[in-house]
Length: 264
Image (cartoon, rainbow, N blue to C red):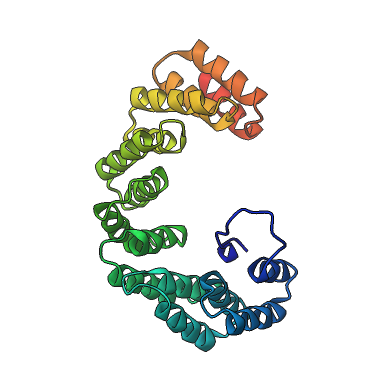
């Protein structure tokens, strides 16, 4: 239940209502969690964390009318330009598999907080995970215009642009993502995919080398290096890369297929 996670302060106090409610949800006792959270809110109406979690749990149990009502109540305890209530409603709707309505809630979050990237980013990231590249691209681009600059957002934008056939745009996004987090290989892997799509073995090798430097035990990086090295006519280096890929547990069928290609 990833979407039920709520950021809490780290202290040594006994578990509060929100933590207990989360534990109940993990045990699939959602109705008890709803009762606990409602009691908490009656006693402490300013507990925004409890209100946030209640919206999501109502999504799990499928009581979307109540989830919408609680989201409206939550909005009343926040600043007018705070998108949190609509983000939580989107999460609740997504938990209920109402994806288009969830997207509308995320878009509402973006409209309510025009200076914040949060709503647009959430809408774009979730659309990308649903495989809806056409929905995701403009929302991720808007999030970046509003100031989102993390590697994950850039990677998602690169991925959706790649799916839409925009190789130049995908490369630009992946390069920005690699610059945003120099220690991660994920955006370099995206750049490798762009290079393979273009048939550019030299650029692919450079990208896979960056991946391997950041994730030295990733067999897929060695498989990619082997492909690029073979394309560049460096068969001995490609064979060594395949040996390393095999050591790292890369799929045996993929290793065998590339070895057979080397022998031709």
